Image (cartoon, rainbow, N blue to C red; front, side, top):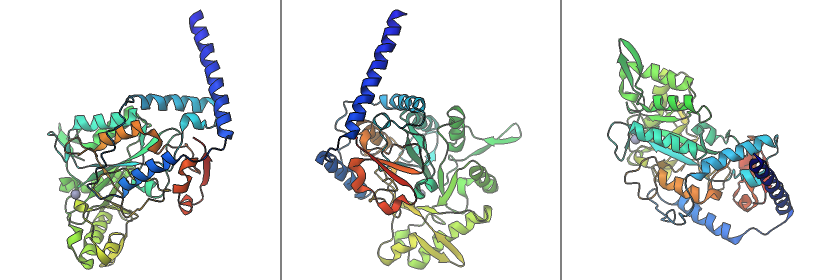
Length: 389
Ligand SMILES: [Zn+2]
């Protein structure tokens, strides 16, 4: 007992010392480090690179334990609550100009493949993200910079392409219809039941004529998703390669997708596009991936998603380009060093690159060395808070 009491006292003294030291360091005005600039430029180049860009920089500096981050975050969270609203920057290390992973899934199925994740592996992905302090936000909230994640946590976005049956499958059991417990939607719901703070925001990029491959259940499935805060996005009318179409055909493909979805969900805002094959139309046709009209249906994509292979910038970062948002393949096969687990390791080793929330959607909190990368007009009504890290 005595031992424990003295240990507690020792810890309290350490906490007091750390707080005093942090106050002193906060009040000092130190020059922005050159090293940070260089690292950031390196990562920015990665973001700007082409789809197959493999920087090869992620495998270095692997000394740190990769399992410690989730625990660190929980410790931060407790500390934050004890301080009754006072954000301890040294513990939380908010960086709302940091990077965000947009994960790309295709099918969920029995046999693992480059474009198929087994239910077990999908559950493992969610568990890993959760334990490392990631929390789901929707694509819509990312595009609108309406990121609501608790202080110390990192937003992550789930996307599913192609509207496969493995993403959302309904089965019959004893004469009753129910969700296949191994489809993505059911797995997400089950995980969220066990970890309600994880969320289940996801966007399903579907094409026609039969999204999720059960013709009689399209209406049911769309309503089911929307009622649970999940979203439906545009993936062309019939998975067209948009780079090989003319302006009118591009608008037809994208407008017919929106029109079809709205036949099931009147007035629903389909406002982001995952490019089929990641193929972008060049020249003046490029404008039609964002906005267009066909046969009376108008569409406006606030975000356009590529296929690979880097984390995306924060919505307030100068590199944020909603018409070219990179995604990361949520796969462990042929990922060429730029798959989900490669980037998780990268962020474990480079926590200063990661978006970390300040827990307040009215403020954008960044370390001083990130200030030069923030696009001031992207702040909108939000207050910019800068601290020294
Ligand atoms: Zn596709």
